Image 1: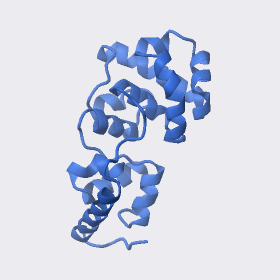
Image 2: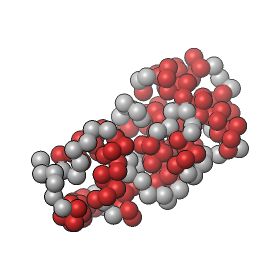
Image 3: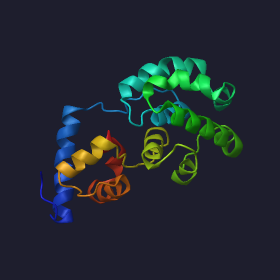
Length: 186
């Protein structure tokens, strides 16, 4: 593990070197969640909490054929939606959050996914990680996506000692160049 306490300039240089190596190894990196629009990415990212992207992609393959817009998720019972997403785990809470998010989109945003952190964070089931994924991949707004793996690797590389995702995000924002935040996270 790299030592913490290096100067900010040294950490930035190390981050640049790591990024350069990663981009050579993985030149076409992108979000691994299948989606065709911001709404689908929002749903997929909510489902991805404590679940693999591969499993989410299996579930959303049929889910996105069945439900096209926020009203579609509200037109079925919560029990029916739970069955559709069951294999993603935590399906009771995820179904509740998806339906609440869909209602909020209809009530506050004409059924459209908002393009700001502030508005996204007011949607049920949406935290900073989800908001940063959607903003970075759909609205060209840079953000550091801190999931379990990102936090673990950031600690291992010595960029943070924090466990709290919001603190890890802030630490990484200091080290990584802003124009690389979203891509570095992937």
